[in-house]
Image 1: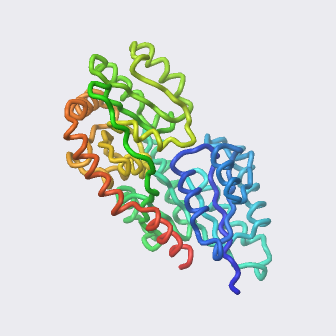
Image 2: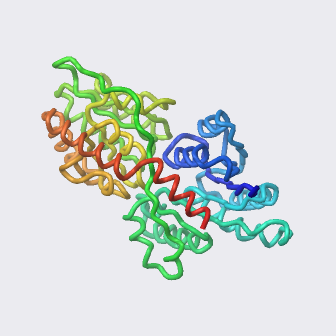
Image 3: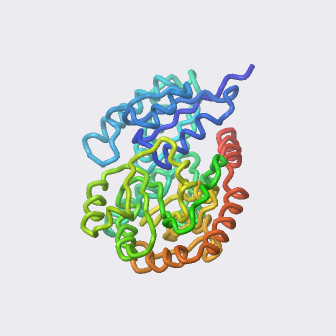
Length: 374
């Protein structure tokens, strides 16, 4: 009988976002007769709760914080080394840019401290979920982040890139071509039927998103303010540090009767069947789960063409692209779909077909499993 391969996933936050969903899907879907899985995370949030319900081991690392603090990074580094020494993983799978750097360094130091004969050195796998240098930051900061991301790739044995756009950004860099693997995210089918609406009911625009600056929600709210004379509603499902700012914008624009902030919902995808249009006007993205899920629900999408969104949406066939931060273009795009039920239906059907063919949960699991076993 073969010994199981021990995988240790590492992520900074235990909230619920794209990177957390990715870890959860891998952790619960990998064959249990071949893999023994544990997850290191910061805090006891939604991800920790979901994993524990599935009887997946979680290790809470209180020193993990997303915001960079020079002194705290040393604490995180030593804490990670301590955990690696205790868990003795065969594979360390790091998720997000910050933990990628610290985790890959810890993963390189750990073998130097252990009994070399006890276990093989771990394979270090890194999934970026959108490189940090693509965020809306000053040029000098972006340059530093680019260098740090490159170092992380060098320290890792394998790097999973979730969209072609970011693969093209780094594949020409020296010494890393053989490390890179393109594996698209995958989603499971959406259950439930679309709600049949009464004639004359409002056109429901919606999004599922963390409330962060990267998601560009303020620009959609400003667009809704310009469209407030139309028979529409806008629903935002998600939580985050921008909640107070977005709430202020809603009241400043007198659209509290049009816009709802519902907060985090455990079964957020069930709301997709209530929407007529989905929007995601992010400034920076990797490959967003929310658009994939909107596609499975048969929704047309208004989105910014950043990260891997252009690999999901086909311009003017399954959605409409807008420039990030450009409110006027969001207004025009939403107006097109609000005024044309036929266009909404056509775009939604086309997007559903694309997602079903290209972004299944099965392809993500199988390709990742194959990478682990190489």
